[in-house]
Length: 209
Ligand code: URA
Image (cartoon, rainbow, N blue to C red; front, side):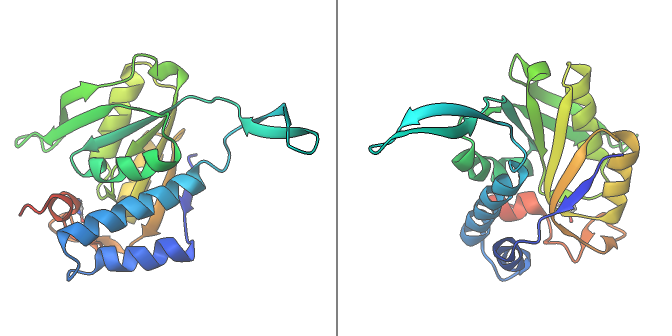
């Protein structure tokens, strides 16, 4: 079963409070999401493998460690996922970025892909699917299906805030996918918003309504 990690680092929690606050305007909201994404990237990369190399310091030879070259891929779900990409790239600049666009079919209410552009070697990469809000889990589940259908084997999901319903839905459909969050909220309301949440992440990031 996939594990769920909630990053309770004080800086993440502090910034998340201002992200949630409805008085926070677009510019500051975007900056804070960017900063939290960087802090989350720091936490999510804790288990990256290292390898030992030998270097020379100005004083002596030294055995030291560098990243073992695991290939990463970031997959933002359009459009709100875009708001977290640059923050993650601050720490992992060599990651490739793929995009998955989904819309909700008005009849079936199911997410349908309208845009998919991925790195050519996704089967070799550890992929991080990014969506700030894990609400019903419908989009995340579909995005993960889209990746698996094209050969992805290692997938993680990173969100700012989740509803328990969304977490359960992803755990059920993709038990191999670990989920990384800044907060787990109470519930979904009747309109599908996370409570207390932060409102519509895409609108708040891009200043639309
Ligand atoms: N998507 C959002 O942007 N906000 C929510 O609360 C739920 C889904």
